[in-house]
Length: 137
Image (cartoon, rainbow, N blue to C red; front, side, top):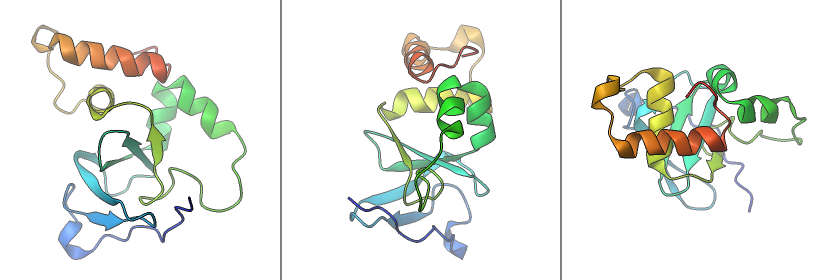
């Protein structure tokens, strides 16, 4: 499957996170995540159970995840690098809830004080932290 569509160029109506929407070459509708999509992002991720694209920062993900750090040091094949454009995100083998928990932890958006976290939130963070080798999470 060839997913090499043109880079997503925000139009005036999608200048705010969560309003952009595009279709990749396989016909799937991708949307900007309402909270974890930054207009100046340089890394695009997608959870397996969601059509939302997380537009985040490669440097931060490398800093928090030994898995990402190792992946980004490997030579990449010619062409558009996976995860470098909106239409060709890195597809993660996790559901959206753990990825939301990790982004909340990294970006400190909506993360609750320790006595306000639910068991489900902590389990989701633990699950993705093990998968992506995030020792600080």
